[in-house]
Image (cartoon, rainbow over all chains, first blue to last red; front, top):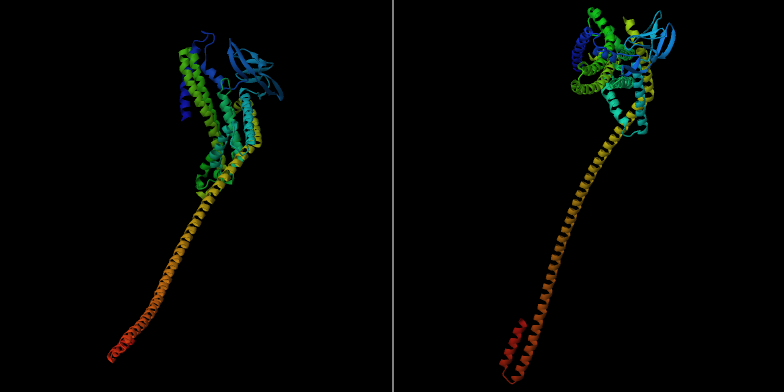
Length: 339
Length: 166
């Protein structure tokens, strides 16, 4: 439901900003630099080689991030601040050209392993995650056998909920083996979602590359823990007449790939849509260039941020829930007896 | 197209996979394992404590039931003893009454005998006295009428005889 609302609002706002952008195009050069909502939004939800913080007096203030390149087998590491050039146009450093967040070099094959803004944000989330979870663990050591205290009492209900409502119903007696994976994926997504909500923050969990990896790892876990029953269901579906096999088996096989695809798109689209809505709301202020617009925008943006906070939990939970469900169907045994 | 797509996000793809797997391993070994273990341990402790409390409650209930039963038995015992004691006491009283009646009857009997004896003795004595008195009277009479004719003597004789016959 929330997703449908998101999609409608984003389509509406995108169409607004699109018409604005096109009208701006016609009257180009009349003003020196006019606000372009759609490029601003695209810039904010996309990845970047530097951590842009704010603009002041035409100057862009950004935290430089390490650029790691493998060009023609050579490893090159330098800071993004080395790139020099115009504000919007391509920037250069040596033979490398940074244009629209893409690094190329004439005559060389460049693989870009840079610590981009999303990677840096993800590292930050991981550091936070490790600090938090290690202090939770320390709590268990300190209050052994006693009621939880402090940060421990905040995370314990979440952990117990994931165990009792996600892992055990889906995985049954196998749950203990997959608990570390489910807990890690839940908190990893949650912390990245939360960091994405902080202004000037990155959009790591709203990046399709981020969600692809998580979905692929989940798919690996699912298929590698698949028992005979799971594979039999795919290649020899029980209760299906033989002449239907040419139709059913490819569909079942496709299911192996559609599951991680659905996981990828769901998380990516939900987080990105939320960011687009908030950015679009703020764009109104600059589009109309008026304080009167700023008041309702601030109210709506606050409401949206609360909704985003909820979605941050919800999507982390849904991803974990579906991962548990997929693993559950893969490790299930003796299924035919119930038919 | 795929190559273009992948090369766009190569950095994030690469670092994210490495980081996620590293975090998974680190947390699994150093955080999730002890955390889940501790939660489980505490839950077991709580479950055990609750079970023990339930058992203690059941024990107490049993004990109470037993006590009640014992009390009931004791009460019945007491009633029985009281009843028996009352019966014994009643018997004793009845026996005592019986004995007393017998004793009094016996006393009355013996008193009657004694009274009879006394009466006979008294009568005898009266008779003797009467005889003596009569003799004395006769003596006096005789002395007076020694010179009297024999008819008077005869009369005295008659009286004495009459007295003897009594």
